[in-house]
Image (cartoon, rainbow, N blue to C red):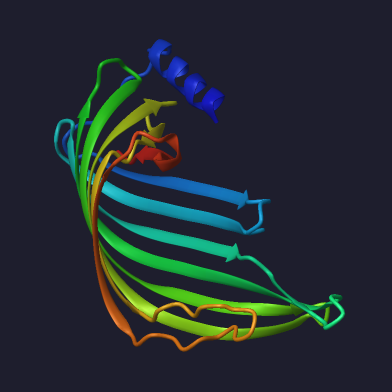
Length: 249
């Protein structure tokens, strides 16, 4: 990934032959994509592990209301899937031999779609390379699915102790620097660095079940409304999204 980024920057800085057309009256379409995946396994006494996959795509259409200044709309779709396994509980017979093992797992699946409004200013230091600053606002609606279960081995019996689906509403504000490179006069590549962001999310869910070797499904709590707010600033490449754009006229 680092080699790809440095190669992109090297080409952008030294290939200066085409002319940009970020002019009043020009339309453009673009799309950015971000994907992250992680898998963590802890081989200590907890014998736990976690997996996380995140996917985000954001197609947009924009219009230059004056040279180098564009406004537009878009639609962002996000999906994340997280799962974790926790310490197995071993149940032994009177003689000490293993009778069975309970292995608890938890997974949650998040899906969201969010219309986007944005304004973006372009600065063009070279004929092919441009820098932009993008301010965007979006409101999202989605679902959050939570499943908790345990598997009894060696019988292989799976029991679901909690399966819930809840609605989520979110608001997002982002101020993000971007880098564009024109491959031709009409088609280019871009990186969105997803810099400063504010997120407000409301969701309704229940407290988790608690697992134990004797009672894998202790009583759950009542439904709770959760209002969450966060402000973040990131320079981590994992937060960057990569995409392409096309000037239409």
